Image (cartoon, rainbow, N blue to C red; front, side, top):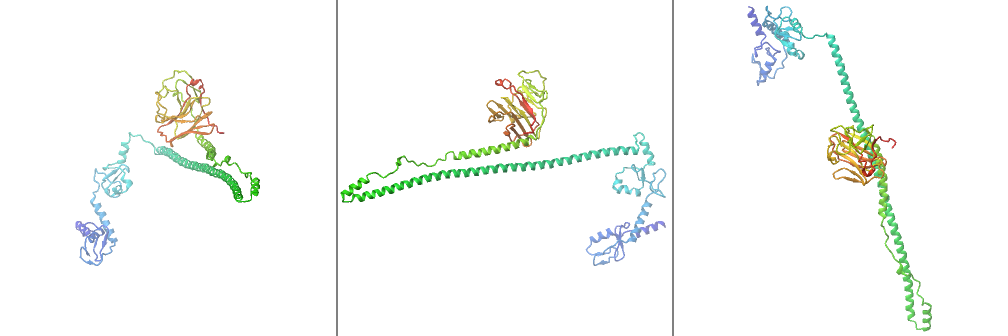
Length: 516
């Protein structure tokens, strides 16, 4: 009897299309019920809309609404069927820890929750994202006791202690993160400051360029005006002289013409007495200049343009001196404090205790063998390796032969190598006949009288090495387009002290005189 009732109930709550319990049941205008999905799919495949049970046709697709009462009854029916399908726990099986009243058999145990679940109560672990991460195992009885037994050999800490330790780690990590944030904020500020300084440098460079070029333009215009004025004055004077001479000549021509006319008239007279008297009164020649001594030459313009260009050159030199002075002040802002490295010094050289001076001692000393030491040429590097922008000054007073500059870290220190950029050297060399920038070919420069201190400026990123006469505030030479791929070291060579017997003075690394 119960079986019959169950069969009748299943028929009442079953969809005639899918033959399963209603899911979101809807009613058609003819009164029949179907799952919303089933009837929708059925009508999607038909040309005309009609009821699958009674075949009633509809002019338009009916607007279906869920049958609320039938939906609730179908849900209750599905629950009752599910409960009936699940077997109650039997002796020896693991019960569901969540079921109240009649306990059902557990299908899984959770090692995180320490609870066993039947199929119904396990459903959240299969749906909720957080619970999906829990470890599920086959059903285990008295799960909590077993877990404690399994962890008897494991180190155990109190929850509060673990919390405090973890919080301390979190606090430390927070401090580190904040420090990293501050570092990056500082980097941002440095970049902004660099851009600001770059703009100021660019504005100053443009202003200097405008000032100098404007001065040169004015000077050129003045030179042009002076040339025009002088040439025109000379031409005008020459024209005036020629005009005066022409007037004088024309006057003499007029006087001579009149005399000629008078002579012609006299030659036709018949009065012999008058003729002789007139001839005697006019026998003297009219006064005229000796034109054989008069010379008219075009004006000479030789030297006019040269004198104007000399003036232009003088103005340009004055502006160049101002520019070089300003340029030197700017590069001196990148001064670095460097000292000479005794591990690199050639055995003939002697360093001062402060590492700022070097001179040739004339005797090869016994020094420890060091792979960094120069052994063929008397040279020495600084302790400090550099990049970016840097500047240093070396006093060369009272010396006749020396060289200073920079060298890359990997230079050959044991063999005789040419000091060229190709071999890693960018140096200015002085000898009795002049200055030379060591390159291939060498760049010969005029010897600067009384050169006492050399400034060396390097812009690593721009590939620039510049040399300055510090006392005269004059630029000596710049090597551009240099290829730097390693750290650079300042390099000094004081030359042999017996070079013509007058090269014993030391090279001295000196500080920038801020009053310059």
